[in-house]
Every structure is written in C-alpha cells, then in structure tokens.
Length: 56
Image (cartoon, rainbow, N blue to C red; front, top):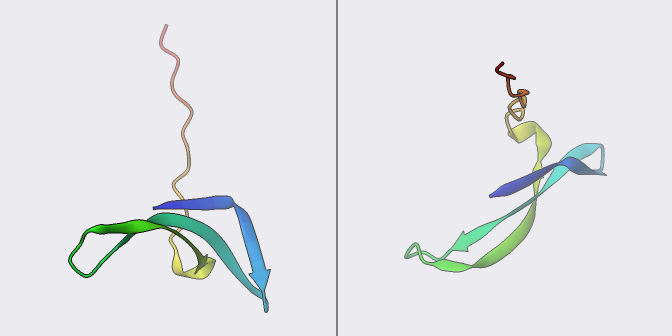
C-alpha cells in the first residue's frame, strides 16, 4: 500500500489521505489495484527521513 502523505483532502472538517494498494479476494488472490481515502487520524505519523551520514 502506498499512502500519499503530501496531498490531503479535507471534507466536513476531517482530513483524508489518498492511498493506493492491491485488493485481495476472499481466497487471498490479487483482484486489482484500488484507490481509497483513509482518515488521517487513524494512521500513525510517517517516520522521519534521516539524512545519510557522510563518511570521510
């Protein structure tokens, strides 16, 4: 699943994030790609990206 943290949608005062992932059928087989909106408050904050250390 990929969550687009940079773009959000606000509806009725609630922030939603766009997400895209692979949908599975009841047997666990791929059923195609799907785009959805996820309520931002239901997700943990993304991990901070660290800058790589420069080794001399």
